[in-house]
Image 1 (cartoon, rainbow, N blue to C red):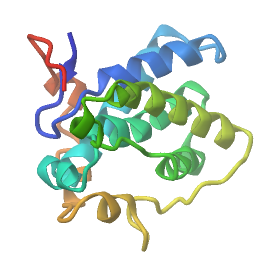
Image 2 (cartoon, helix red, strand yellow; image 1 turned 180 degrees about the vertical axis):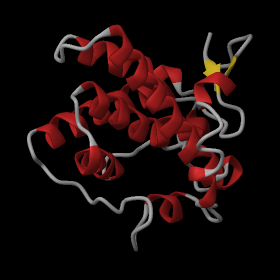
Image 3 (cartoon, rainbow, N blue to C red; image 1 turned 135 degrees about the horizontal axis):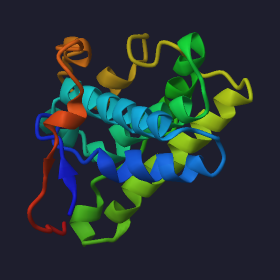
Image 4 (spheres, rainbow, N blue to C red; image 1 turned 45 degrees about the vertical axis):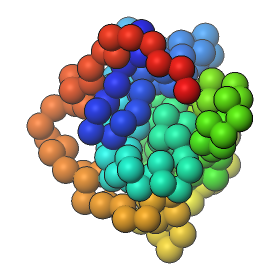
Length: 183
């Protein structure tokens, strides 16, 4: 079933792994590179999700797997494509212009929720490829004037992005969802 990062109420694996698998055909990477990219994706997804505060993000009618997943997929892409340092920031900035995941599907029992993880992966891959081709994104997408956290949450807590950064990886704090739940 799905994995869950409970502190952020989202599913990181459903975007991190498919993004890495898709890019493994394009980028020659080692198994270690592949795993490092997935772990980085989990960290970005989870850290942004918890900083948004799940209830606040949902109150703005967004599905965090779709929104934060886009950033996580961009991080996976950046790692898989060998982007480092300041070059790593551009895919995140590009991803910030592509986040989506409306909860309006709930009002109509529509199928669009099922698009959110795939669309996040698609957007993250595009962000990585664009950045690799020297397309620039805003490098202050998290802390700038029109930053992601303030736009997608009524009461974000930016300090949670870097909280416990040296205490291990968030992938190790992800649980497995024991049953299916369709909404």
